[in-house]
Length: 250
Image 1: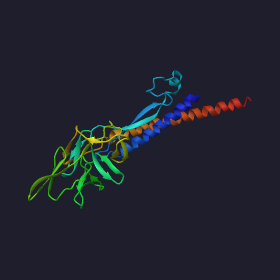
Image 2: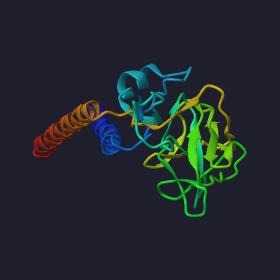
Image 3: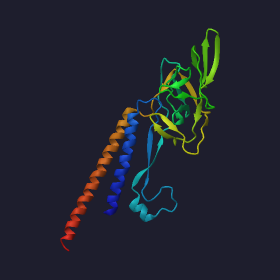
């Protein structure tokens, strides 16, 4: 009975944590370039990667807890816009941006030219090239190539003024999320220029979490959490009944 109670408690903890992930994914389903987080479960006392797993531990304590979460690397839907500075990434790369917390990375390519003539995000963070420098964009007709090269046409002619950096975080979905659509590499990883990605100008990438699947996942986690709560209630009632019967005999 004790093991069953522990199993119910750990199950409730796991589903509550997974419920938080599902709620965050659904809340950001409309965020450009957002990458959904997926949960990974493991045993309480028996690690699935362990080579010396106890048979007793496996039989009694192999109920799951949330071991970790990772970002889904699935490509979001790319939708065309009329803005040449809206950039969508085809592939696994990220845009590098300069924030108040340092260099961070995003898939949200809804860019603009600031009053100071620099390419920035809608929030005002400077967009960086592959070497970590800001990109100056003079007044004129802007065109962005598939490799990120920015050319500006003026009455005097056309010239390439910079190149948007496409960075590979090299962690296969292990990037750390800092907010809606903002990420940083895991400790010990140095981003490098990406070789497997390209840019589509005049388009934006949607979140790789759709609202229908997100809603279904949220409902599933809610129902599983409710089941764990009911199981805990049953065990509590059984403990109370057993304690009452045994104490009356003392």
